[in-house]
Length: 239
Image (cartoon, rainbow, N blue to C red):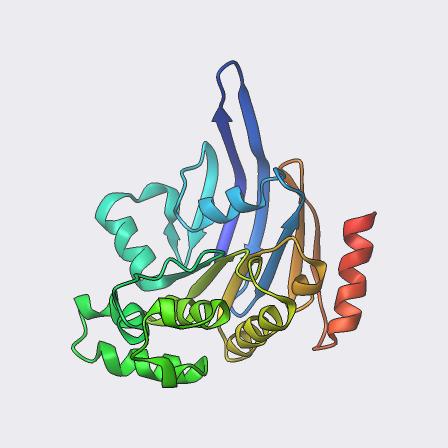
């Protein structure tokens, strides 16, 4: 589904060039729930931004479903991201003057007269359909993030990108969000997620650890044993 070859990315500071990603190669399979971990500044969010089309690359290639991401731009890139990618962030970025239902439906309204029906279906899936007429200021942080998940799914993306989606949530709410993402993955949704939390990483089916711009490991997890997965994450991150 995703093929990344020799991915390099650098940024220019006032007096020097800082190389963030140093020749990354990786293949993401359909149905993977890939966790991307690493210390602050290691390159994990930069990698996610490059693979999702938010940022350009210096060298290498990113191929998604036969399309080379680094060879398209403008309208073609916008359409790819609109129809094949979904995004969840630490901040939910809901529109304050739209209801929960409207926030989910808004991007699909551009091309589908039944956008509200699809939005309601997704609100039921994330268990907040009873809040459809509420505004963001009237719901909790966890409920806002559930809305953000529904919004990310409204265009039926092939890939869901999540950057620290539980970082601003308490433990119980974070687990609720991760259970939703895990269930979506079991239904076939491909997910790439950045997190700094070993406990959250345990929900994935696969983990890569970024250190100084390269992937130091690529570990597959087996089954739903969160404790065993957590212990394995701790072994990897502490070595």
